Amino acid sequence: RAGAARMSFDPIVAFGENAALPHGRPSTRELRQGDPILVDMGCFLNDYASDMTRMFSLGHPGADFMAVYQTVLDALNRAAEAARSGMSSSALDGLARDVIASAGLGDSFSHSLGHGVGLEIHEAPSVSYRSDALLPTGAVITLEPGVYLPGRFGIRIEDIVRLGPEGCDVITSSPRDLVVL
Image (cartoon, rainbow, N blue to C red; front, side, top):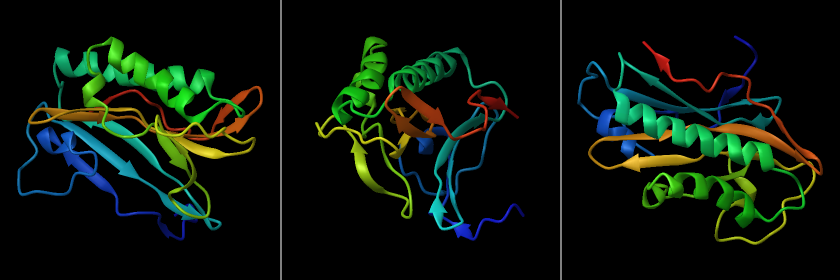
C-alpha cells in the first residue's frame, strides 16, 4: 500500500522455542498464551532493501523474558549511541556483545551484530567481531543484537542506521518496545 515492490527476503515469524533459532521456520506448534513472537521482515522500495526485527508477545511473557529483552534493547541502544563511520566493525560489534556478556548471556549471542543494506539485503560492510575493517561514511547497516536460549525463546531487535563521522541516523521508525497482544 505504501509503494513497496516486493519483500526483500522471506519474512520470519517465529514464536516460543522456535524463536530461539535465529532463522526460525514455521512449525505446526500452535501459539500459546505468554509466547514471545519474533518478526523479521523487509521490503524493497525504490530499488533499496530494508530489514527490521521486532518482538511481540501473546499475553505477558514473564519476568525472565523481560529481563533478557531489556538486555538486548540495552545492547542495541549502546551500539546505536556509539555507531559512527571510521570505527572498526569489530569495535561496534563488541559494544553490543559486551552488554549481553555482562548479563551472563554472551554465549547466547550467536551471530554478528549486523550487515550492510542497500541494493541487496545483505551486502558490505559486515558488522562483525571477525572483521577489523573500518566502517565507511554513508554506510547503511543493520544493528541486530540477539539472545537465543534453546528450548525457551529468542529475542532480536533490529534497526537500520546510516553512519556519519559524528554518529548515526536511525532510519527505522517503528518503536522498539515489546508489543503485548
